[in-house]
Length: 127
Length: 171
Image (cartoon, rainbow over all chains, first blue to last red):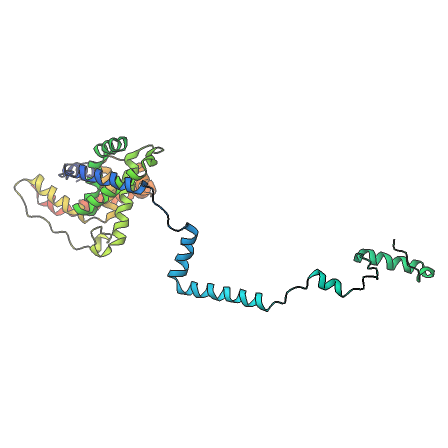
């Protein structure tokens, strides 16, 4: 039996017929599902909070890891000394004494200048 | 109403072919109905999915095939969508000789076709009853055209082998 006759025999096999009653049922179901899927739904929780809630509520490992992280952050925050205020810092300085606010570069320039002119060492001139 | 008309048109044009395809693959009318329903539900939910499709028939066959595979994966214990190799299957029970030789061959051929591995059976169904080219079949099944052709060749060889004892006996 060659391919052609085999294909002919296959084509002659009785073909199952689509049951007539299915059409209404299938299309009605599809339309109902489509209507339900496009119906507006009120969101109780914003999506991000839902995501968080899902992580925290459904995974105890993640929940405990997050709690530990928050606890560490809190302890670090508590144990870190607060920076002194500007007023507290200024209280340590004599208001009558001038403060020269110079940069490191300017200090180096000043040192080089003083090295070049040793006679003016006692009366520095800021360049 | 427009959506309903569109669905009715699609059903009229493609549902019979999809039914033949699915019933051959699943072997179950209930599964066929579920999958057909799933296809039309998806189409109703996303009616624009066929807008850019050149041949809706191929697209629908591809969708049907994937749904059959999904269903098979979900429910492997039922083993309706048989993926066992031909050698691992139980021997096909050959029908008793009937008065009409053609009918006898048809019965044997139907049983042998049902017993083919699903990846070969699907190619035979698309080639013989849907008159698809191997290129189209490859597109539907997401396989190379050469693979589709070789699966068809293997399937025909197996079918011929299963009928060998019949046409030896025939006058």
